[in-house]
Length: 116
Length: 112
Image (cartoon, rainbow over all chains, first blue to last red; front, top):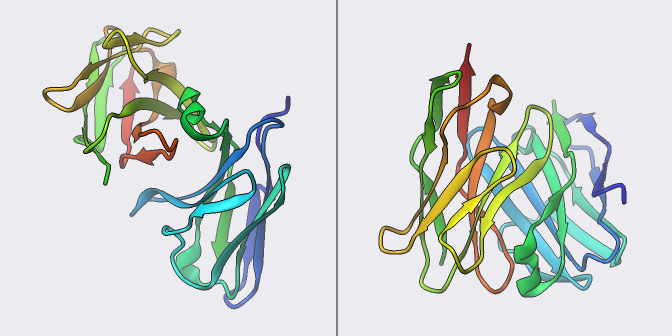
C-alpha cells in the first residue's frame, strides 16, 4: 500500500483564491481526519469522517473551510476565499474506524499551503 | 473533554545522554495514549502506544513510555539518544471514538 496520499505537496496562492487539498486514504480504512499544523497553534483537528460521513467538524475554523468525502477513497478540503492566516501544513490521516482507530493513524506527508 | 499538555517545547540534549519528554493528559473517561514522531518535512509516524495491559510500552528504536494513571502522565524516555532522534515528538490521547487530540509538541535537539 502506498500509504495516505496527499496532493499537492506545496501550494502557493494569492489571497482570495480558492484552494483545494486532496487526500486518498489507505484502502480499507474507514475513518479519515484532516489536521492543520502551525507554529502558533500546533496540530488542530479540523474535521473527521467515519464511513464517508462527517462526524465532528467542530474544528473547522469558519465557513470559508469545507470538506467532503464523496467515496471511501477520496476526500477534499476546500478553502474559499483563502487568507494569509490560512498558511499552514495540512495533514490528512486515515485509520480503521471507531475503537479500532486506536491501533494507530497513518498520516500523509502533508500539503504546505502559503497564501500571499 | 480531553486535553494533552507537553511540558517542554524544546529539549536540547547531547548525543548518548538520556532524555525524558514529559506529557500530561486530562480526561474524564478511559484513555488511550500515544507518542508520534515527526521528522523535518514529513508527516507524523506512530512511535508507541498504550491501549491496555502493561503500563510500560516500548518502541523498536529504544524509546519507552510509562502510563501513570494516578499522575495522569505518559512520559517518553530513552536512555541514550542519537543524532538521528532529532525530531518533533507529539503526545496524543483518544477514547473509544478514536478521535486523537495532540499536545503542542516537543522538539528534541540532539547535539554531537
